[in-house]
Image 1: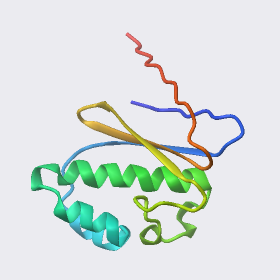
Image 2 (image 1 turned 30 degrees about the vertical axis):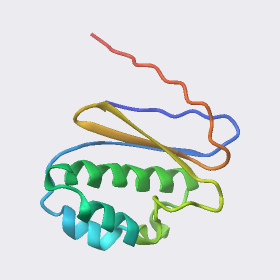
Image 3 (image 1 turned 90 degrees about the horizontal axis):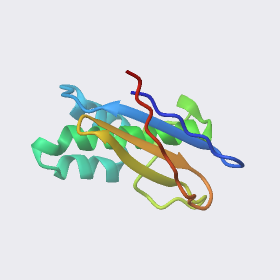
Length: 120
């Protein structure tokens, strides 16, 4: 799978991840997730934790791509569940049951259009 985001006159970032088991997920959550994000992960049912882990991860990846900050900012300092003063917004979506994705932008939320290309 692949995703592309195109937006005139605004910065955008997008990330796509396959939901899969990650034995290191709890350690990664403790190391890289903000307090509120950790609470959401830890309070989720065990059967949903990997989906939550990757949903939050796509939000972080999309954010650092949209802002251009890269890894110069601590991932733990980025709380993707908090209301941001600079009007950062997140649009999560799923391509299918095994993948999660998030489009992130700053400014006023935009109308989103999408299409699916399939090659055979």
